[in-house]
Image 1 (tube, helix red, strand yellow):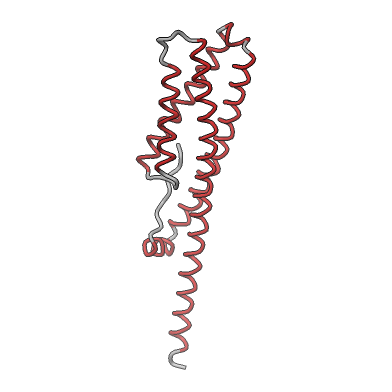
Image 2 (cartoon, rainbow, N blue to C red):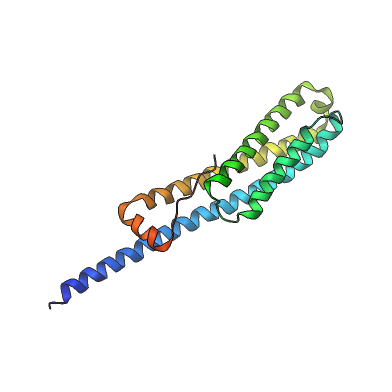
Length: 179
């Protein structure tokens, strides 16, 4: 009987550690899955943007750098995705977010240019391509929201006092959102 109480406490602590570990592992896996989805949406978006850069070359003067900038920025995001099959550290995400913002601004500027350019605004193939780019951006936004939400839920779970100890013990670390 003298060992029953300490043994009960030990079993309760072990059960709590195991439950916390599995909860954190499940949340981390869900965030990683969302990262994979984001990567797939970004690859599809990049494919559309590379096609857009080729098509823009037909409308813009040869010295215009816009098609090359689109290609360079999509190559940057592809490189980050190939290097990080799982969510990267904050430094890499900052670089990726910067490239993503630039690409988004370029697409917005292209839409505005398209409206002012008679050749672009009447080219049905170009309009269809811009629609595909817009749809791919929308899908990427959806997966960005999904990843950021799951990363936030995981990070909140990591912040609870007991989970911090389990996280340190088993190597769980915070995930950074995509800005």
